[in-house]
Amino acid sequence: MSDTSTGQVESGTVLALEPGGSRVVVHQDQGGEYELIHIHDFFQLGEPERDASGRDVLTFDSSSLMKLKALADAYSFDYEEGLILLCLDLHRYALANPRESYSFLDDL
Image 1 (cartoon, one colour):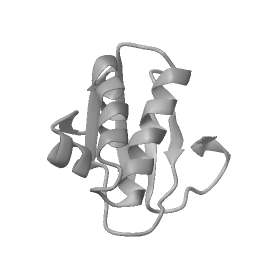
Image 2 (tube, helix red, strand yellow):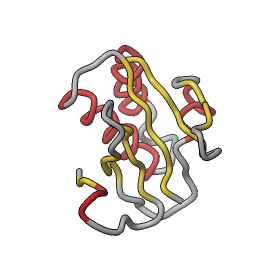
Image 3 (cartoon, helix red, strand yellow):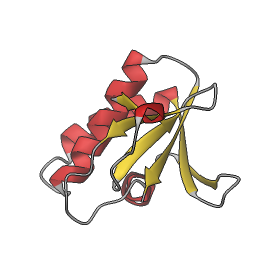
């Protein structure tokens, strides 16, 4: 994970929106055809929203991110590897930063 305030962020990364307003890289694009919103589409987890600039944001409560880990493990052979790694990265971020809710966005 890296802080976006230190420089350019590669496109295709997924960022966490921190409570203070900063953005932290939680996942680097692994190539392939997957996006953050696919977590909601495939696993019915997270609430899709739009931020003030119209970008898609996916918000989770802490229990949803724990479920996401179990689903990623269970379906690891059914979905693209990059999507599974994204799920695991979001879960790791939640473990390292305990709070009630989390918001993530694609940095396209």
